[in-house]
Length: 251
Image 1 (cartoon, rainbow, N blue to C red):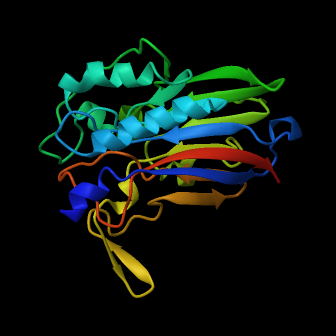
Image 2 (image 1 turned 90 degrees about the horizontal axis):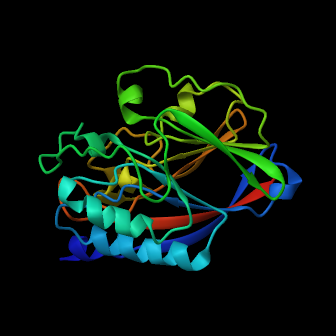
């Protein structure tokens, strides 16, 4: 079946991303953005995840960021940790499926409170140095988001400020000017999509505004990953899984 095939037909994409206010020394910084593994249930999405992780490991980007929904079943925790161990130090947030906050009958809650390799950001921020510039990486706990509570990040004057949030609507809620870049996932590019004329119908999220790609609001740029795994059904139609390397460019 085509939908089963497409679920493992991962696109490995390198994409230039222009950011207002990016310090010149960070021009060309490479960020790998992965999302929505959904490990656990049977799906060719596992193949997509494995290929994506190997590709990122080969390319050795400056930063690796992963934006949630890593596990749909606790039994896949060992598999997840083994995959993360292949990557240059990943910065990770969780998604709603990691806590089984979903209508998906195949999801089970997972207690992933730490990582053996990488940094799990639960309403927390860290600073790293890249090319002699300070870079802030902050992550939203999905439970905070779903309960509509504030993540409460303090102001920062880092040269590049990145927010990891599983939910793309973060673009509409963050303070103007606080973040240069938001990385999100959640929507799987629609996962089951029916093209028509000059548009397409998203069966899972017909009203979604930010399904995949690049969006901008008042100087903040957001990249929404199409993700790698599947939910509800182990198929994708006209919504290929993708691993993306973002090459930052000064504007």
